[in-house]
Amino acid sequence: MPPPYSGVALSEKINALITEWGIVKKLFSITLDYASANTSVVEILTNQLNFRGLLLMSGKFFHVRCCAHILNLIVQDGLKEIDSSVIKIRECLKYIKGSEGRKQKFYECVVQVGIMGSKKGLRQDVPTRWNSTYTMLESALFYRRAFINLD
Image 1 (tube, rainbow, N blue to C red):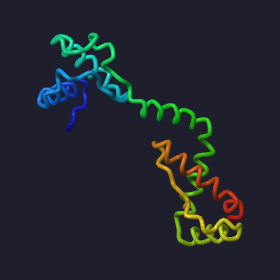
Image 2: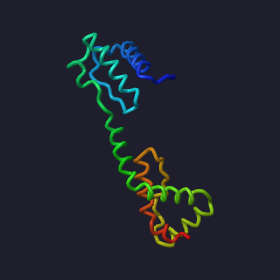
Image 3: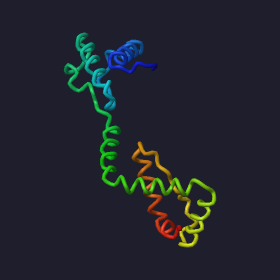
Image 4: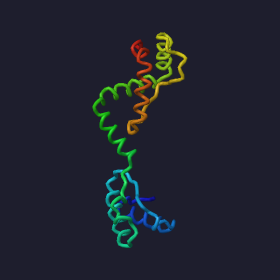
């Protein structure tokens, strides 16, 4: 949907689509993340659908929070507690992956400590995706002995 992404514009678009798709009378709930405009979207849609008598229990259960988004917010908050360590690991991985010479030196350390042959690689994270940070930390732990031998 092209901008604007205001609550009014989004609710108009959703209303038009549920009408076009013929699901207005079948709609029970809507799942949205915590974007600020979404609160307005839910209020506007609830009022419109309630006015037409289309919501079960007057829309009491209409807005269902996105559990994946909630989980992400919880984990991101928890990661703040170890942020300095995560940043150091991330920067270390960027440094190693930044040149072929450093990658080669790292893999020589991997061989030296006897953890070669694994299909695990060094995994760089995407900071906004907690599961990729988990994967990065998991790979860094696996290769920790190689990191220790890296000069």
